[in-house]
Image (tube, rainbow, N blue to C red; front, side, top):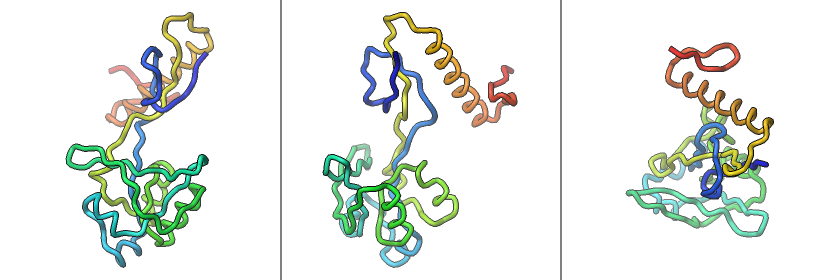
Length: 176
């Protein structure tokens, strides 16, 4: 009856309900790496840095998609180290082995604690995240309707909290 995908891959004829916040991939490194090698200020400077790359299950390397001067740039920076697991990429970045391109939510604690530092932030804009999607032209079962309602109420509560509005203990926004 329904599925979950990144917003960009939801078919146009489907109803799409946001699940959570937008996502953001960021370029990060340890403070030690940046102290030793310097901080890149433009995307093309990545060519002169060590990078830690992620190999995907089909064998290809994950390409870095950055934005600079209003243009999307797909990069294949030279990888000093290529790993097949996200945890390994994070550990290598913490250890100062190079720059990594990671999902912000995977490394939120490392960023907050200062173990990793964002670089090229202006090149890493957020993008629409996950969506619950379902056909809008068919009957929507009661269970799916209830799930959609819960997700929408949660999204409203999160927006109210970010805006400084009142939120009930259950998480629902209070109308003012």
